[in-house]
Image 1 (cartoon, rainbow, N blue to C red):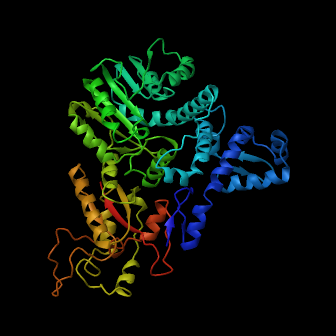
Image 2: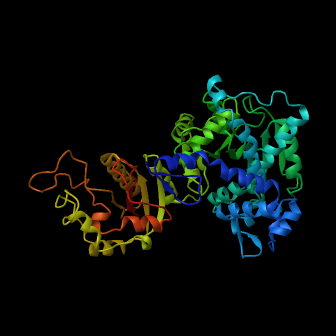
Image 3: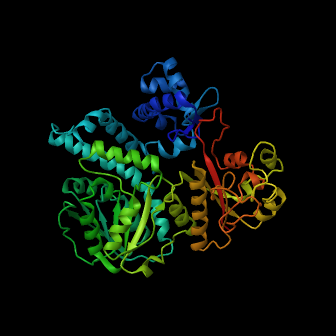
Length: 517
């Protein structure tokens, strides 16, 4: 079967045993990255690069061995060389150099710490949950572990904070912020820096806040931060209806289904009437591979944490009388949703309608949704040859020659600027129904020109009429290939990999196209 390997930096499809081998060796990538970060190799290469001899001397390595290691880093897109000197790629320079603002090294090495527990996943499955690996830790060891965790989360939170602030682009924020499970305080700090008329209360365990003070203390917030030690599962010692913004960032997945109602109800109680609740987390519908593995990580490394479906969180918030947005995917692997006691309070947020649409479409069962410029849609005159010579459905309603010609499709595309590429899989009828649902949702949220092309001959009805007249023109749509669209080239232009099938039982990907505006 052909599958996409999500841990690679490009869309690679492998067949059968090769796919399994690539899964089994996935840790090779992470171990190389862990070692390079631990050695500070990327910091040594900044800014002028270094020869293998210079690097070997700096880290006390054998030059020949180091060249092989650098070769692997080069293949992973983390370093490059000009034949004599090695240099960081832009990715490494931005995120893996120790003194850079967006440094992610602590976050990466925290993943290495978690990896040691993953090795005992079979024990966790037998016992039904986490094994307390740290039970014998001394107080100082526990403190060090907490500090490593907070530094790791700070790396991530600073990146996420920039994305989250974008939703408040047009909001003249002022007043009080409550950051629950604040960790390093990076999310609250981002708001304080952007909005000088705000103050923040950081709510977390006392041993966490002790270190948070050190991390935030160097920033000039002029007494605008209050630290409030508490166990989040107990009553919150803060003023009810006292906050303009309540932040739950990466908190929900650390708790169980049973504990979730208390956290959401407490957050709701803290909101002013015109306040906004911001929830940032993994949700099972968004980036499903990473969300499912993050849920497994919670199973292995926490006592009761889990990743929730976005729809279950929305239901809980609705029961509390809150109006909500759908979860909105960030450019990274998480999503945000917003809630308020008054729906009007959400209208001032800078929420891109297209982002909301993508989030809703993902919940319909598509594997992925990709944004596309219509200039990347490749239309060719040869595609209907595959229909006329090679498909027994040729001549059916909505198949060539009864579908739009490539010339007609070119004219149609000129009326649009953007589109979504929808990735799914068989059965064909179910995929086509999802594509129809996506088109209807696009129309409902304001894309009045929305029109969809799906994959394959129409399969909505059990059989076509014998006289060739379609009885379901309301729901029928042309296929991409039948309308002159070169699916392979269009998918490649979207940055994805696609190959022809070698065997009839190979895994099949379907792609639909949704024109928006």
